Image (cartoon, rainbow, N blue to C red):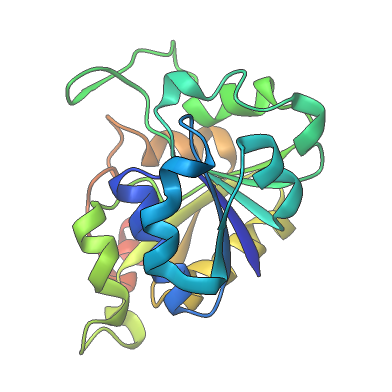
Length: 208
């Protein structure tokens, strides 16, 4: 699969590395332009390319947003991602480590409003980049001992697509439900944010 990643900071670059290692292609974009991505492209090799954000969306089968939350609105022309599967991996903070107050809304619900018609899935936002880099291929992380990545959304097929990518990376996809309730569980201030749980632990938590 060809995945677009908008955001090439520590977490976006880490995701690109493990996707390429899992035999996916990546199209990378950021706010500084394709030239700024040159060193990362040289590291990743021919499976990676650079583009502007709208071009990355157009060239990808699945798009991952890994930019600061305040940079999401207006990042893309809304019509450019209608019907596209978008993984919202952003986190809404009001300050260092402080969750933003959204009046009971999920941050991914706002993303869905800004990009009507896009198939938004909340995922890949709860794990520290250093854990993401290695945990999917660590010895002993087989079966129910795989670490979980949580998946929330209102489009079942879109969640299946994202779950497949999560599985390819060596993690366990765990469905937390609809975009509203499931997304709130995952976002800053939610009980699943920044928690490393095995698949068995995650499923036990979800079912409790």
